Image (cartoon, rainbow, N blue to C red; front, top):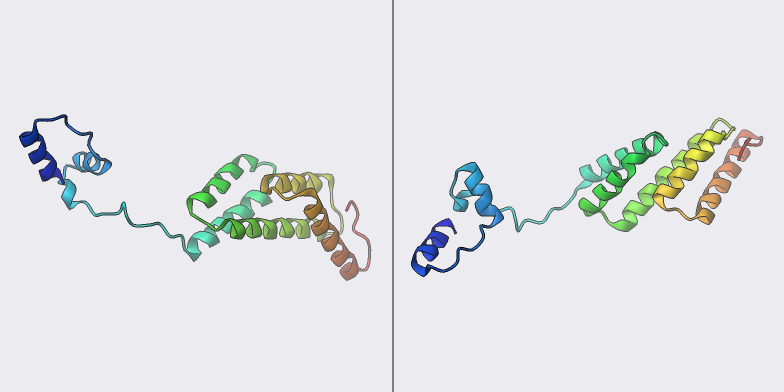
Length: 154
């Protein structure tokens, strides 16, 4: 393309077209644009590794709430940038929220700080109140059945 553009400019004498991003990159690197690998048309396809790493990040950010609240927009943007299926993202976040509830209930006492953390996680993920209450009630019922006693603060 570089040679053809130069030829076109010298013969046509018309207005010089704006350089493409490929030509700008080639100038920066000091090479011919035709020698650059063609990556523009190659679609990005996230793999299992990307999904596992993203899930770990979700787990960490939700686990460190409220201190990590500022990181949530980046986590959500990363899911979109990686092209993850929205339903998979929703289910992954719901699964992590369920684990947060299980961790809060595991010692048979749900503290005020744990309630705030769960509310913040629910808000960030976008879980409706009714669904969050249903998850909490189900897990508390399982815990009470397993432990043979009540869960305080639930």
